[in-house]
Image (cartoon, rainbow, N blue to C red; front, side, top):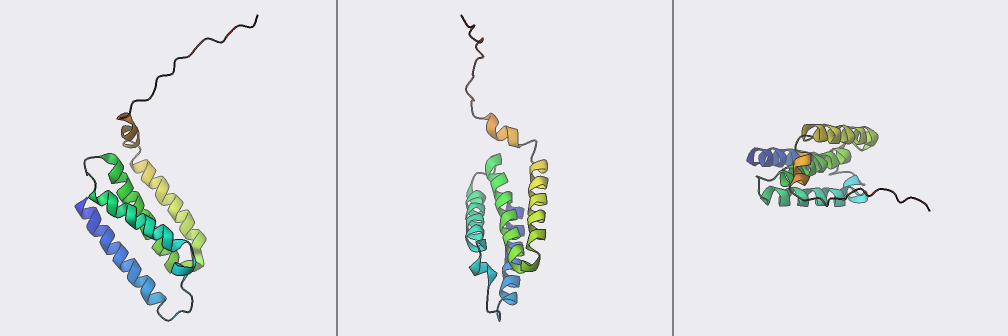
Length: 127
């Protein structure tokens, strides 16, 4: 994940710099007046925690990239407030692409856990 960490640091730095440049003189900052700030803080927290986890497991790998995508999307929403709905469609497309990319790995996450076996019982006959 070392290359991924560097990539996300560069993306976050560029996007946060763009937000700062755009809203330096502005009276209103949508980053502070919308739910974007808590979502960004949550995604960055998950991103940092997943980057410190064991890289051999699939769950931290998926959480690392998903939280990085969400963090970048939130910053793009703040920069492009006029076309917020375009970003929502972009987020949905990113999520679908992410799920398609990891479709082979998602069942392996749950394969390590034993699921209870439920036996089918024949229906009781009415008397």
